[in-house]
Length: 490
Image (cartoon, rainbow, N blue to C red; front, side):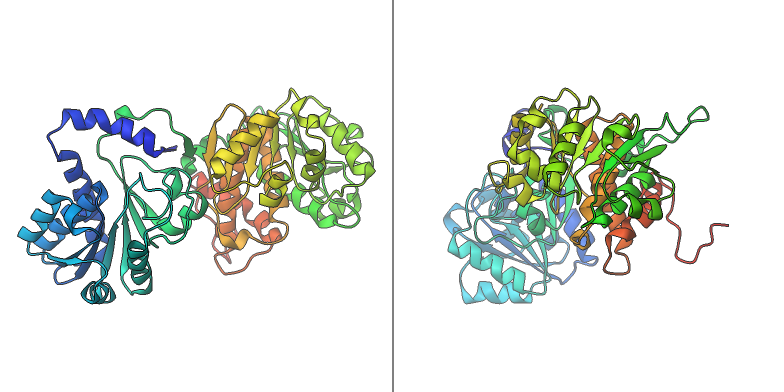
């Protein structure tokens, strides 16, 4: 797992390291790692034009010392100072000794330097920055974004909140962010994710001093460890039996997609008990289809309820029946709309429950997610006593105890009809294998994203493509190469 840490947690972890090392040593570690990444990104550095955007804090010092390393290797380095009287003095002196050029920001020469740059390094604000950029800093960010240069942020892009990813106005548009000590939540969630680009983590020795993380990101290895293959003693009843209540005469596809995703993920058996029985039976003969209510379907180890089921009185009765069971439940789509009108249905449950709202569905429970998506998911989970999977470009999963996951996979191509039904089916299958609700949601989001990546390799996808590529995605996270198109499998 990759831990995510707030600015306050980083500051606390830095204190003992600073106390145990010579003055400036921690900054030198950071600057050396930063320069190394820039070297790797540029390939050859001799004669390349590098522009440093330098603020008044330690990030400005990091940029100046990194620029010094690059200047000593033959780069043509220019530092643009937002406040010349408050720039890091030792870093500024080092750059001048390396024959770097120093300019005041906001001049014609500064703008010309950015327009000609091969790489622009953003050291204007650090992890303590809050609120929007000042006009002079915003102008530098704009010029960098419009240039042909590689854009690299120091620790966090200036203008984003390191803890939440919130952006208030302009922010530096980084293609790469070189962050120190630990990954900050604002680099991987909310609007900040879009400004951070590829994140490179530099170890500066904080590890032994970091607390439990604010949130975590699962890796493929973490997910693979939770996808236990069947053993020789398993049968269809021991691998997880999942029940699906999805689809209707109006939206039969939701039942087909949700059932197919559950079948393709993990369980030994899927029981369908919705009102799109004919469509599901035709699409998935492997499922056990019941023409009746959930109570008639037989024993299951988890339910998925909601996608495309409608919100009429019959649907409300079915939702109440499912939530009245003592097994885990995934609540999605139409079921969320009904649940928002009567949250007691989930507050009174003793069995695990996972809600899977997108932003509009989330707002039906009383408040918009807002810029702090991790905090929002935690608050709703604590209020309802369940787990919440808040969908988005970086899906967030939180439970009532405060455990939180931020998903690292996915693609914008997943923003198409039916993909949420697939996610619900995956989550239900994982819940039936015994994972707790938040963990099942986090693993499902990871698999869903990986599957989207595979399905979008050749361009736009439809939800059915995800079901077809699910086995390949599961194989990929377990280290098995995906089949190439045209492979017979023989």
